Length: 470
Ligand SMILES: [Zn+2]
Image (tube, rainbow, N blue to C red; front, side):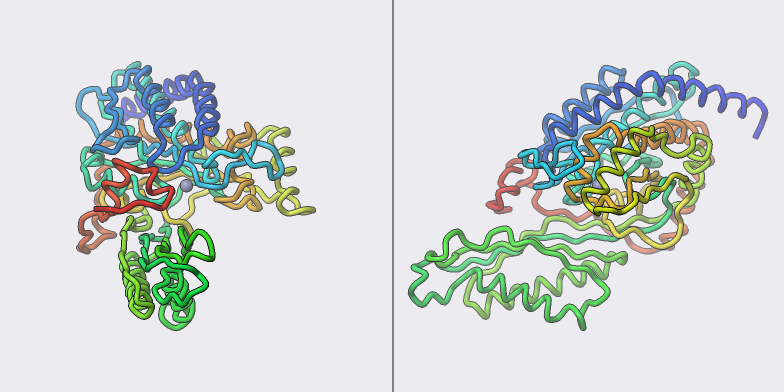
């Protein structure tokens, strides 16, 4: 690297850190604002508006309702030519997990809770975009920062829809962050997820008489069959379900039952094959019970395709910035929360930071599907190991200032990482070459989603389990 280039990189990074520090209080306010709302996937109307307005105030060109998805948006800051770096915002919550920001179970009563910390991801990643844009303006460097406001991550739907509809087309590289149990950049796979709802349609009647077309019978038989066959037919693949509708009162034979089923596997094709196997079982169970069967496909996403080029770049910045700077009060509060879930246990919390390359993550992410098309870099921030993702305690932590240090670290790393990439088209090209090498001629196919009309026109019908996709 020439001395001039090095000087420019340092000048830009210094400016970026100054701008990031200046907007840090805004980032923290947005953590809290989103947490208060805790809106369900595809219902994040107010959360999306808050984030889009914030970007607009900072000079980004904002498009709302992009691709016809009501709670999706994009925001662009462009100066001259240069790589397009996409930062992903997420802002949806999980049903039934809402908890006050206190170290004990105390439900909020809201439909959703931020038990996956997406109230951090949106503001942290957008804060990075804003700080990087201000640094670009100050130092006069060329490039394009694109924020993609991605709804509905919790059902791994939003990014699949946005990919299919072209919202990612301009992006040369993608950066994002997530809460986890370690601090560090990530270059390893996570699970693929395939998801759909099976609807069983019978006939109602008085429960005291012989009623043979019982939709609940078929749903239960389907689930029993899946459990019976699991050990020998798909011991390698997780299959999880919830019963969304199973009747309303015992003396009316259920004429409709709904089972939401997901399969999970690092290997995407295997996750799809097992989903189809389960669909087949469910269809047969319906036939045995003499009831109708309808599949309402929801979505499918690949897990992450690792990218060492981006992970190494992010880790270098993370090593400079260092692990989250929790105060003693933050640590004491988290310890209290740990005591509430695991009485008597000492909190285990990663206080270090390193690159994670080995093994795979147990979770599925819909940016996984994007990572097979556009190189993706992700940084994780740690929460205490005893605080389970998707649990009330995670929602409690996400609403408390003790949670801020982690996503703030991620935000600062992404600010510098974005500018490093914008100033180094060669690194972006290297990341793309790595992606091509890892795919090695495999056909990826089109992103596959269902529930399009439901999610774009009547998302509330999805959440009350009455949706019918035409
Ligand atoms: Zn999440």
